[in-house]
Length: 477
Image (cartoon, rainbow, N blue to C red):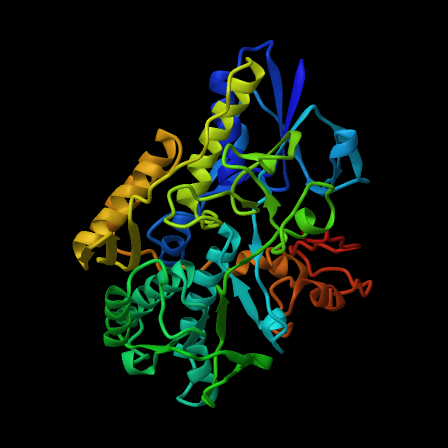
């Protein structure tokens, strides 16, 4: 029985495995998925996770719950040796090990594109994974709590300043949703005035949302600015050292929260550690039927889809164009890839991938959105409803659809949840310090330096006493 190895459990990988389970006969092939995370992130929900409109766990689709006939290997593929049909897997614990296969499906996905700008690596946070979205929300809520206790001044102003770098879909949707959350928070913080909020969106081009046409794009800018946002077009981030933002336009300001949404880059594993063919961008060369290779030189038993695959866009008006890296394509490519794998195993011909866009829809905050399909443009509340309706249908499994709907309906009645859980990033603080108010809140490695030592004195009568003799910490992955 052949082994189909899927590298990555994101959109394309998850849907490939999910559909293979439904189409393969039990004795036909075994499916193996290698991914460091135990879930697939439904990224269109991340902006709403920022705003608390979607529970973080509902944006994550469990691989083990939905892929019951698939072997799941927790780890990261760090090298592909297709000549010997072997990959190297690096688990979270233990040494690297080889994994053999007969057919490989590379759906490793892209990574966040970072630029060598001073301060970005130290200060900024991305918006590609659930944990990043949760952290952004908690940091904003914590900043409100901290600012409410301060007198007006530079530090308070910095705490209430948010900067998004990148005006694509992730940046604009995240910016709009977080701005909506911050605006509503002011009602719960009488110490803070709405005029104190500063939200900056920085885009290097002369427009945002390149997927929509010019006029709707300008309307989005005007809509965000009417709500108090500052949109900096034709501007680049020059520096972000210690949260001090410097733009190429000469503008400078201090920002407590900097969110980096500049775009995607090719996966380093794909363009550095594989013997499969790649193009000048570091993406896998893929045919229209999703086989790796060219029409003249296909690579046997190798397939790819999603953000790290240069799939020809047969629906485009001109040759040489590849599909854009978005969820709409990744989901459909994954479904077709499963069909093509089954077809080739049974001696049938694989079909080519052709998909005509269903339109573009984006949320800009609670009750606000934009939708465009060719010349049809819908704005405001109707577009926002289209956005929610589309994504509740698109998120995989009825269980996730029902959970997302339940949270939305609850929010209509009870409003937003404004509790920050930033303290979970230091879950042992109270345990280590013993509640001593003289011990400042510090990162966990520094906390261990302040563990109270046993001085040999006996506790007072009737008192209980706990002595910490050692503390160990498993490094975060």
